[in-house]
Amino acid sequence: MRLGHIISAYQFDKKTLEQIFILFKKIKAQKYKKNLLAGKIMATLFYEPSTRTRLSFESAMLRLGGNVISTESASQFSSAAKGETLEDTIRVINPYCDVIVIRHYNEGASEIASKYSKVPVINAGDGRGEHPTQALLDLYTIFSKFKSTNLTVAMVGDLKNGRTIHSLCPFLSHYPKIKIIFISPKALAAPQSLKEYLKQKGIHFEETEDFKNVVQADVIYQTRIQKERFKSARDYQKYFGKYIIDKNILKILKKTAVIMHPLPRVNEITQEVDIDGRAIYFEEAANGLYTRMALLLYLFDKT
Ligand code: NCD
Image 1 (cartoon, rainbow, N blue to C red):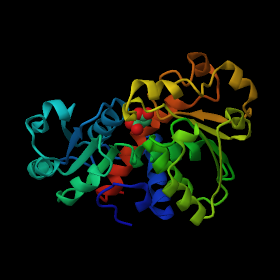
Image 2: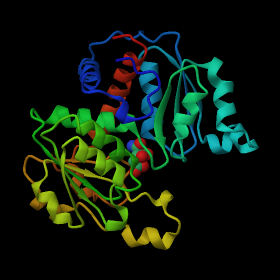
Image 3: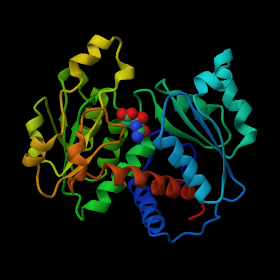
Image 4: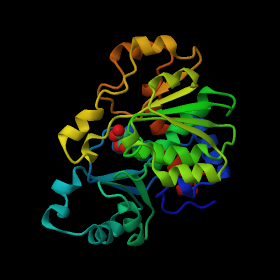
């Protein structure tokens, strides 16, 4: 399957996911040519904060021999601050680059950008919409830890606003043995459209507010309460700190479970958890680099 713009996890069929996974494994094992993207330029256009996503995309491009141009804090430092529309910015930077990686605070912004772009646009997070490349690295992290897909995945925290789970669920839905437990306050539940989609795909899922349900899980996918999406600080404070993985929770988890988090964490995983063998969130972040390298090779047909 040719990918073109990468806007949503719903674009990916199972075969494509598995082809990119093969590339991911080769890259992780350092079995790749270093200059396959020589001469290509990536533009990174980030209107929201980022550490991992932007730097791992840029590192991925550089490691494959390509180049990067970047406007960090695009809301402040690009012409958006002067009132330029996203459409105009995309049209302007098109001739400067071969691929655009964009993060924006509005849901749907990457899709709009793609309509004005002749070069592929990659969605690196659009408001509370999606974050397909994070979900891809999450999927590969799960695949690399378990031999089977007969797994129970607990998704914990802000499932309404957390865009990574909005993309991870459609990826997981390609694997019919997956069971999902959504653990969140009712007000931060996973979107109805996502649940409808899982139903339609025949994926078993449950919803609960009770954190104790993590006992059944093989994968605990913890997420941050998305402070920037709340109207008031008081609203945010209602949920902040509701679900915390600490040494007491470690005692009740399966011995074979893994603890994941797209990061950044605030207080939802305490530092004492980091040394537990089940905590794999830093390995997950490292997989971001390999996943994005694999994705770029696939996108530019350099497999
Ligand atoms: C996530 C995001 O930006 O959606 N971070 C990331 O890209 N690793 C998760 C988050 O900010 O909570």
